[in-house]
Image (tube, rainbow, N blue to C red; front, side, top):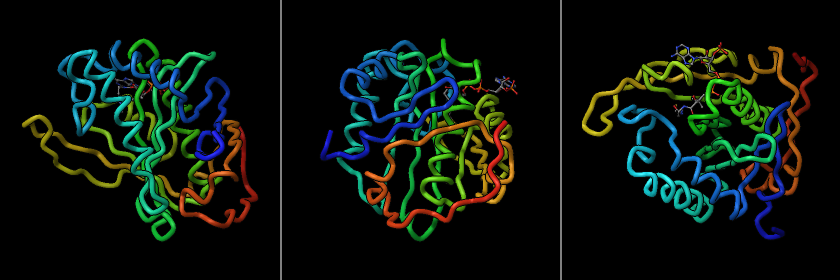
Length: 224
Ligand SMILES: CC(C)(COP(=O)(O)OP(=O)(O)OC[C@H]1O[C@@H](n2cnc3c(N)ncnc32)[C@H](O)[C@@H]1OP(=O)(O)O)[C@@H](O)C(=O)NCCC(=O)NCCS
């Protein structure tokens, strides 16, 4: 789409492609959510968008994408990317920020359909978002939050070099949950071995993130 440059952005990892979904892919993504993201009763997100009926979960996904597009602002943006494996939509990777041009800080969120979990895809999709944040956007910090009992999400952060950044208490569905915050700095990211990730089409949409100049190139980039 010529007049929504984010549709030109594509991130490619060894096994995955991440992009703003077209209508057919958004429908597929909604079906992945309808088929289940977490076991019944599990609490993974501050808003329980995936806890209702399959129809509610699917509709929440579609509306969330439409809302994030409609609400997009270069001072307050939420990039919601569909994650594809072998051409099949398997989940969603988010990267968002408020006042990024000043804070240089972004945050991530992610989910996969249950049948696609535990195969290393979560780590690759988060790494793709980190590549976009640090290499394309010039972020200085990226944060992630996972509830205390979300071992998979917390392990992904640990594997990618995040360090603990405190614990917050939240009420979700009238229950107390502990949200563990983690942070990864650009300095640490650039120092460690990285998966080969390609970001294409970013120049066309750079301005949409409130970033006008390309970040300084970093000399030391090692690949695993
Ligand atoms: C969180 C999520 C995106 C991670 O994706 P994934 O593809 O399952 O993650 P990966 O396979 O790349 O890595 C998961 C890691 O956690 C580990 N792990 C998973 N469950 C675990 C458990 N119960 N105890 C300890 N470690 C666990 C895995 O062994 C793996 O680590 P390893 O590579 O060192 O063996 C996915 O599990 C998911 O969608 N969960 C439901 C939604 C959700 O919780 N979203 C995040 C909200 S913060």
